[in-house]
Amino acid sequence: PNETRLDITVSASRVPRCSLMLQSGFQVRAQVGISVRDLLCNQLELPSGYLDSRIQSVFLDGRPVDDMDRAIVEDGSVLALSGALPGLVGATMRRGGYYGCLRDSITYRPASANLVANPKSAAGTITIKLFNLVLKDLGPHFLSRGVLLPANAVEGFLRSQPGDIWDANSRFRINGELLAVSSPAQHPWPRLAGTLLLRVTADADD
Image 1 (cartoon, one colour):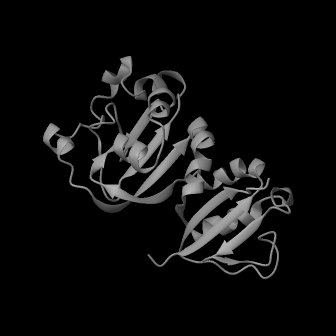
Image 2 (cartoon, rainbow, N blue to C red; image 1 turned 180 degrees about the vertical axis):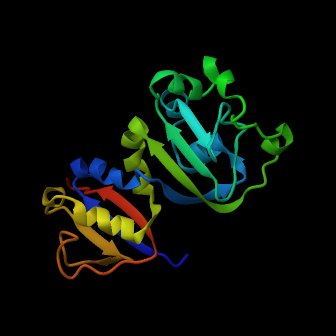
């Protein structure tokens, strides 16, 4: 991969605000051809208990998923994760919910037992979208692992933030090289283009 790598270190209290960069979705590289649960728990290191208790709605390529063990993620798939959604729509879209029959025509059809038992894993890239409390809970986790985002979107977000998000603990590295700035508004901030591999972590001494 030839994308630019941007590493940002901020005070721990600022990391949640940086999660707002993920509101429109982000990409990750992963082994695909495997189940949603395998992807999220074994590759992306999310606790299985969190999936079962906090993620109420799962959408794979726009289709509601009831069984995360039999929904297969492919290269280019879009995976959306949400906490509880309000009203009848929320009840209808809830994973394994009582009203799931109301969306039968759009529900994801589980893969065959043979495909689940014998996955054809391969390297790929997927898009992940996090909604409501799931973004708040998991945004920092994904940022610390690294996500792929358009450079113009990242730069626009960084420059739009009020100055108080950056402090003495803020550090910026591009492709491993420390920039002599404490804010994206300062000169010389390089012009970024294409796709960024972005990591945001909390300062270890904070």
